[in-house]
Length: 267
Image 1 (cartoon, rainbow, N blue to C red):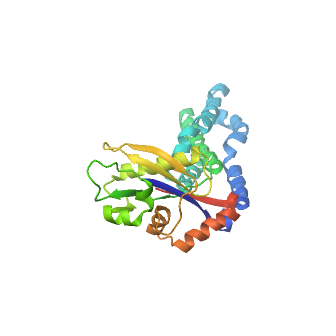
Image 2 (image 1 turned 90 degrees about the horizontal axis):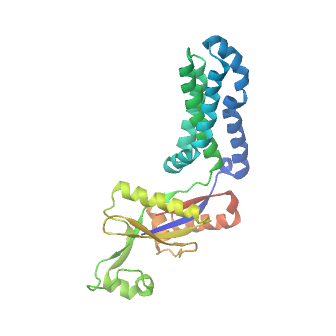
């Protein structure tokens, strides 16, 4: 099973300068809970009848959830995508801000201002900082249909490039079969994690070996895989509607606008 990656050019509103401006606007919009907190301590003390020490626990919850939960928030952004999570974070941040105006006890304030706003703003911080978007294509596999008994089912030079041998032995590649949705998702998540951990750039292919018990084992990452029209990379892209000329165009665009492109991974 393989994973391939390439970068796609962005529309004008997704280039790096537009993203910088939009990111600054988003950061200013969600920065209010911590930077204006001191303006509310006096009125909130009078309304709720609390001590300053009790009230300050609200701010502590906000900061703790906003910062210490960043690994979990980053996982959610990676799992569900930045668009959905940043939208959810904005709704939580704004909703917690609004609900805080209607609380009548300190515990409700802890929950609305501390928990909801804290977790919501943390998601947006992680989402804005981590804008390396990876698009995963279908899991692709090498199929052996007519190999002699006892032969190793591995991608040798003949398996990969000898068309006569491929025809005789029924060697094909295509979308992986008999994978549960959970296993396919797991392989795709592993591919994304490996891509980022190795700091791959542009396009690449990541190979796995699937054990009989369904455990995927990472074999290697190929940062410069074959991109011929008949190879896995191009056929996986074509499977999701990306034509070969369009694929090459995107790769060439990447080479010219590498820093302003969106990476894509194919499994």
